[in-house]
Length: 515
Image (tube, rainbow, N blue to C red; front, side):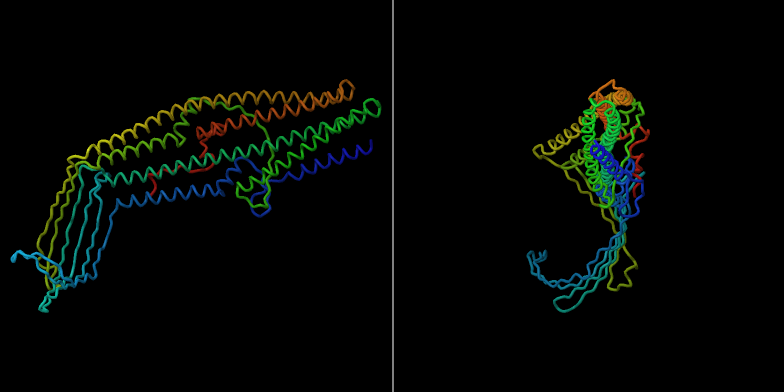
């Protein structure tokens, strides 16, 4: 009997010390070997600040932002300087002599230095790019020739002029390219928001798995406490009634098994915490603790409001609208290819040529050019019409996807709200059952001391309490996971009454404000 007491006390002390080693105070991250008292919000903050995945997402946004910046820069003036310095030629070529009516081999020996400065500006009317360009140009060159008899001819040429080009009856490539870059940037941002919420959902799942292990450990520890009290009661009864001595052995076996379960849950918690340390990009020397606390507060979710959140806050519908607009642009470009088109180019300026460079700006003469080029397709065996039909079908497919997505969202939101309500009702009911099971365990100890029930009945009472606590935990976790699913579906946190991105400090930016 004395040996059993020593073994029992050793087991209880070992369980207490093991549990104590897992506890830790909340310490902010400053040095290695810190103890992180984990909460869901703190876990998400750590992941969003340290995650390699988030860094990749931010780099993707930066990449598309610079692409948009490059496209928008096309709306501004551009200055170019083209140089041919020098252009040397000493070569014989065949040329037609109209006087002799025959080809002649002419030797050219020339030296040419040329520079052309151009300031080019897209034409924008009332904020709308017209796809036309207006440019100011200045062309200067020096041309020296050596004739066959050795004489040299030197000429300087200068022309400054304004030029306007405008395409007609074709897609506005400048506007479309900028709009596509804006849509691409917005789509990348939406993917970032979607990935952030997915990260929050994944981390929440990991958190509640760790929460489950920590709370299950508490359930097992409570069973150890009950069985320890039962052992003390059995020892008292065995002193007065030798027929109850067998009860002590039964309860001690149950206690040993309960202590083993506590140790198993501690090991499981440690392994899960180590995995989270890697996920959160913490130092290997850091340790994670978690104090599980269940607080059931009923949450009312309006189905119609949740549906509107899912349609407006989530990226899915906006991404489909972006795809639809991109398909419209593709249809516009398809219609432009292989169709009638016309290009207009006009210029007006002043020019002068003189053997002396200093006289280039004296007595210039007027110059102008007008070019109208048109393309009229005659027959292409239906290539253009088939391409347009293909693009139209693609547009119709996107429209069908939009309608299908809206129906799916409405159905999923309704099902998830019902799921939340069912788990919430189960959790509240199990919370009451757990309180009743706790009271029954307390009264069972008293009844056992009075000799009204057997040790087996007492052990069964403790087991019912543990089972009820586990069922309560399962119902609570089911409720929390249902809330996470409706949160991911709507991008709205119905506990804090805030959008998920706002709750975790993710700024919502407008692509039209990006420079």
